[in-house]
Image 1 (cartoon, helix red, strand yellow):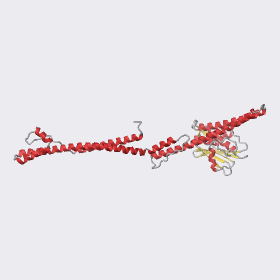
Image 2 (image 1 turned 90 degrees about the vertical axis):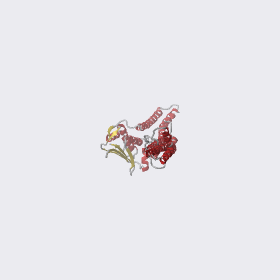
Image 3 (image 1 turned 120 degrees about the vertical axis):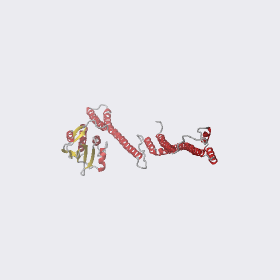
Amino acid sequence: MNRLSIRVRLTLLYSAVFFVFGAVVVGVSYALVASLSAVAPSSTTSPAGKADTGQDVYFMEHPDAFIDYCRQIVETTTDENLRHKCESAFREGVRAGALTQRDTTLSHLLRYSVITLVVVTLLAALAGWLVAGRVLRPVHQITAAARAASEHNLSARVGLAGPHDELRELADTFDAMLTRLEASFVSQRRFIANASHELRTPLAVMGASVDVVLAKPAPTADELLAMGRDVRTGVDQAEAVVGALLTLARNDHGLTVRDQVDLATAAEDALDGVDTGDRIVHADLEPAVTTGDPVLLERLAANLIDNAVRYNVPGGQVWISTRVDGDRAMLEVANTGAVVHPERAGDLFQPFQRLHDGTTRDGLGLGLAIVASIASVHGGTVTAVPRPDGGLLVTVLLQG
């Protein structure tokens, strides 16, 4: 039974239900007809006043002969007693005929009802097969779309039309899932390509520096020191990229630590660890308590402050504020700097996206991507709005 298709099982179920209810109807009809029949006589009296003789049995089996016999006696005899007995026997004969007719009727009713039930059940099974196939057609479309989908091609969609029933909802949900998967795979491939490029750059710098020095017959100490510094810079850059990627990967698995964290304290600690240079920092840190990983939240604040300082103008300004907004904790970081187009502001939270379109190698392009990832894993949101006179206003909202 488990190997049968759902269409076959539905057809068998329809047929079984129809057969059971049809049998109930036939049984009720038979019982009603049987209950309307006459009650059989308890005894039979012959015209001669004798009971249970061979002649009586013959007359019971041949009611017409018995009726003719009684009619002759009634017409030829003057004996009132005999006439009365014949009339009684006549009535008994009529009742016997009625019983015979009832048995014949019930036999025909049962036979034709069973035949009709079998034929109609077969027709119901055929109709059930056709209806089940039509009902399951969307499921077959979903199955075909699932088989057509692969890691390299997620463009297949069910696109089911028709009424908005449960199957339409299932198909639409499946299409939405494929859309999310396609976007996720595209983002993943782009992320891998960008990560490979970012890691290849420091490795290429280190390789070129080493090759230049090794190509010389007798490199000087200064040249060796310069090579060492280039290698050290490349290693630091590669290590920073790997660390950022590990942070993003870690956030994909959700939070492992949930402590009470004050965003004001996290921002203050992050500010102490960032070299602000000649930037003027304005800090307005009010208590803003949330729940999460203290290390990640400090990393979030540090990345925002580092970006505000890095992508700024000489002698520019940075504004940092924390407060409670309703039931949420808020962290805002704003800065002066280059004018950012509003359509580009949202792209800055994607990995390896820079403000200057790659014209500078300053930064990894992962700072705001990590911020968005940390905010998401804490159930919060992050938005970036360009300031009219240049720079950005980045707002992080977390559950209080």
